[in-house]
Length: 88
Image (cartoon, rainbow, N blue to C red):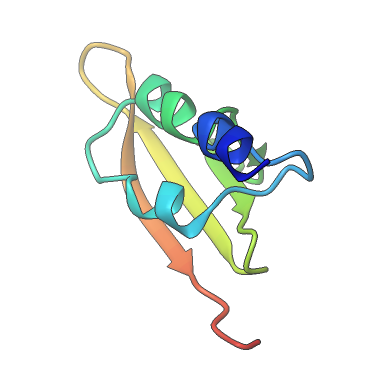
């Protein structure tokens, strides 16, 4: 059933985590819609006054993506904290 996993890996894992590969695809300047397209869902909003989404990685690290509004009213990625937990 590994082929099934390959087909569905563009969306979030069943347990609500995302892969490190997905996390690494997030870049400064992306819109919030682009991020949601890549990660499959909007993360838990842990910001106050701005949008800061937190995601759990399948390796138990975290991805934090912060947004601010640009001149056109679109939320754009301004900060990315990608904390890989490399312990096994």
